[in-house]
Image (cartoon, rainbow, N blue to C red; front, side, top):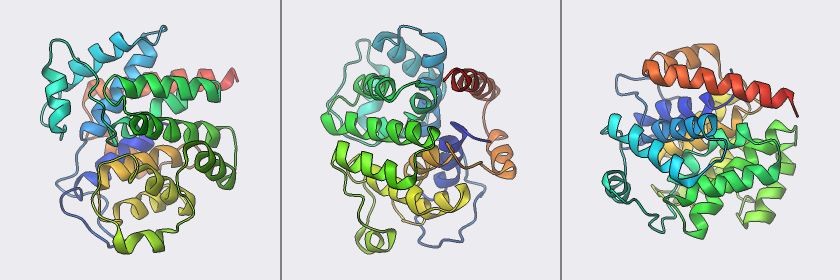
Length: 268
């Protein structure tokens, strides 16, 4: 299974280790604490937005995000984002947190051109994360997904992302690990997540590498997994376990989005 399930599965697998970090590669994929977090809720918000709003307006996205977050409470939302959720007049708050990148994968699977991926990623980010680094993190993630869908090699994707967004992708995970700590910024999450994708052999390997960085595990795995699942199948046993943890509403939305993405892919 490919598509946005990659982000969702990464989120669920990483959820048990966000505040219980591990550097063990062979960690247990699913534990009694495994669940979907804000990464999944907001990924679903972007998916619903792309499905329902042909104009791709900021206003519609804001309404969908607020609605889903009100109905899926206590999913690990950040403090400033909680204030945004409950606001009667929600405004972007100059954030460069990794929330913009963790939720953007539907854009990468929806876009028909690289320019469209970049523009939609910008819109999806700037309703909250209008800081240049917040927008950049979303755009880099969406671009990596789009380019992977187009059959670009990992080296080509890395070159594009490094040159376009000025991310340092020269370091290996072996070089990153010793000094890497929990960090919620795009600047210190997106390059590391992309590196996990670059070094991973298959989907599970990518997610294990991301979680075992012992940092913001669910978001690292969601971002890395969202790129990986553009070309690497999420194993059926992982996909089905993750789907079993989702609400019926999210299962339906996932199916609808996948069907639309397949149709758009065929039209390329």
